[in-house]
Structures are given as C-alpha cells and as structure tokens.
Image (tube, rainbow, N blue to C red; front, side):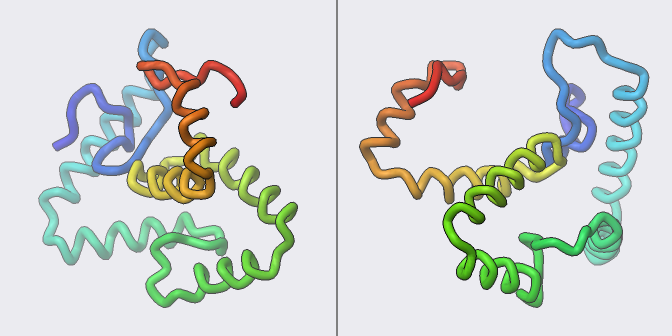
Length: 146
C-alpha cells in the first residue's frame, strides 16, 4: 500500500500529480489522492491477470498513437527508431526537447524517467559529466549553466 504522504498517482513507479511541500493542499488534490488510494487498493487485491488486463485497458484508452515504451509487438517503437535513424540532428534535438518538455507534467514512472536521463547522460563525455556534477549541490539543485 502506498505511503500516506505520497502524491495521487505516485504509487509504484508513477510520479503522479506534482505537489511541492509548503503548498496548500486543495480539495481536488485530496479527492484525487482518495481515488488513487482506492484504485491502488483494488488493483493490489485483484488477481494479477485481472489487474494486468485492467491496467492495459486503461493505458490503451490513454494512448495517442505515438511511440510507447511498452510496445510489445515492437511496431510503434520500431517506427520511432526508424524515423530517429533517418532524421537529421536538428530534428532529433527539436523532437527530444519537445518530448522532454511535454513529459515534465506527465504521470510517467520514475523508472522510465531514469532510463531517459541515463540515455541522455551516456551521450556526455566524462569531462562534461564531471563539469555537470560540480554544478549540482547536495540537494540536487543546479547552480547554473555548464
């Protein structure tokens, strides 16, 4: 069961609603939190096969037709890989930045966010990684452009 102080939707790997400490808790936030807890509880007590079917159906309803990381047949991700292979660098950067901006407020699992960050991190050479790390303080706040 999720911890009581987590955000609505912040169960398991989900990031859920953005809530910052010190901000007033709204009625809408509390309602979302209650519904998220109820859904989590119900899924946690379902047969795993039923829970998987329910989650897959809900995710399919949210699908936009774009690439997904859970594309079991490989067609959507395959298409994305193909277009990324043929796109020039400026298009890749434009789509990448637009996607990262769009993902900022999206309920996307922390594992997926870590994979995105790791892939980007791997593109930096060791010297640039060290320069970046010198600009991040102990709380993880960035102190300016590298």
